[in-house]
Length: 111
Image 1 (tube, helix red, strand yellow):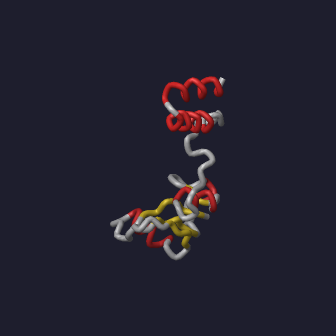
Image 2: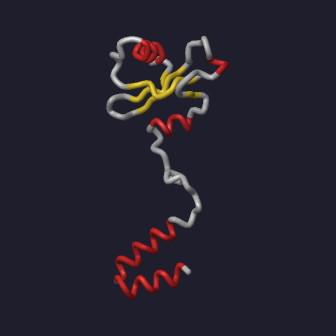
Image 3: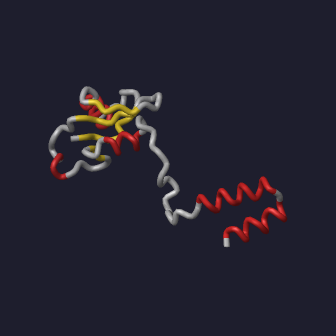
């Protein structure tokens, strides 16, 4: 089926357009509905850091951590770098619950 479509397209639109169509068609054979599946995450990106530190959470703290101070924070600096830090937990909490003067943002807190 795919070969027939490619052959018809080559004769009608030219080789370059046909090659593009073939690459799109072949790339879409995975059956996945997630457009990001299989794409590597940058290690220092927020998503990459969350994947590397599964003990971290976003939003409400997990039941085991409620009422406790987190041990670490994933902090994204204004230049885009994301770090896993124990030292930044207190300033991150201050920034989150008060004036937000620390440059950057808390991506997640960690056990």
